Image (cartoon, rainbow, N blue to C red; front, side, top):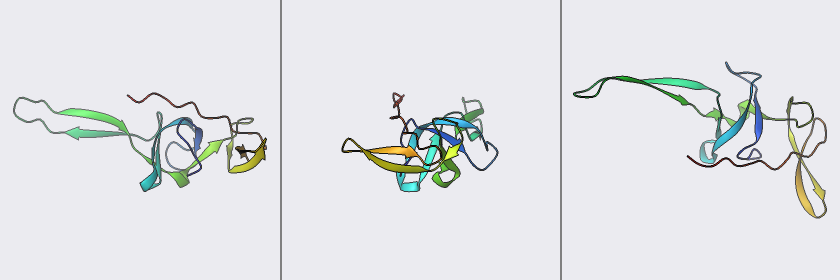
Length: 109
């Protein structure tokens, strides 16, 4: 998977198409990612004895094919390529050739 935790991605399909957000969780076995603030869903739970019913909001996973890395220069969706600089493999955006900055991992909650 070329997209990493904390990367800035653009949603390419669905109701959130064109919006940008950071990857908060990777589900590698399912080839899905959870993007901060995108693909919001509501789950209703029925009330039981002593517990009232409630609405739980959560962010559903998005398939990896429906997101694309945001180009660091323009912010548009781009593919990921690789270059070797100083004996290190560096990810670059194919659209502008700019290196993709190392993602800042967010703390787990």
